[in-house]
Length: 370
Picture (cartoon, one colour):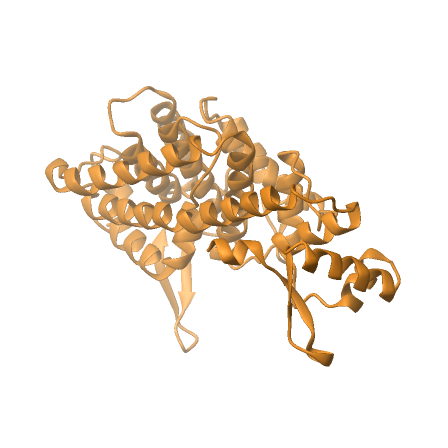
């Protein structure tokens, strides 16, 4: 029996006493990170939001085996937030659509979630009407024309393992109406518990041909934004789910084949969320290091070219910085590149490493601050 076949579906139950301590611990961590972020000021909050939303989008797709272009995602998110990005790339419509969907979920967290809004989100995931080589129903509920919707995998041989079978397509209009009514109605339930229930409920309905996991995580982010009371994201649930993907799929399967007592699912969700919040510390530290670096750099007169290269080094510079790489990126002569680099070394913003052909340069001040 699947969970939706229980006679009292979808009236979930859980052991409130079992949840008290983990829920209190998670809420405490949530308050800590939000308090720390509020103390940073608008610009640093925006920078943190940029990193987290980018990570969230990339991770949510990776969970489903889709690997988005990292630079294009970062560039698209930066444009949405009006953040100057030294390595900005032109992003395709697919990535821009996913970014727009994510920001609609987290920035408009108090806007009612409607079927039409879900259709728009779904269309943003599949702008061509295809999932891989397969044509799918985009912006429409799935049908059972080709058989029941199943989540399957293969063992080492040809045998398929059915992990889950979704409700019949004919049930979806009523089921989604009930889900959307619940999600849009003010509740006395703790908002983090609501986020966990929303994730499980939606992914159990599996209302679309594809993209259900990504939409479930977007809904989760919307609900967590409600819980945080802000349209900025400072921790990435999707990135943490990606790190705990094996246990994520295991607890989903166990819960979907169980009773309506979802205590174990809620405990897993709280644990994963706590890990996500703790992991956000490194993002904040990185943002603070960049801020301190620019405070130090503000003491000196530096050229626009030097500023561009320092920005690159602070963001996602690949490999070692050499004078020839500087000359190529900035389209200047080797002599000009060496002169600009040596000037920054003298100002204690760059540090030389190696000798001869292995000579390269690294940012100095942020590493000292660590």
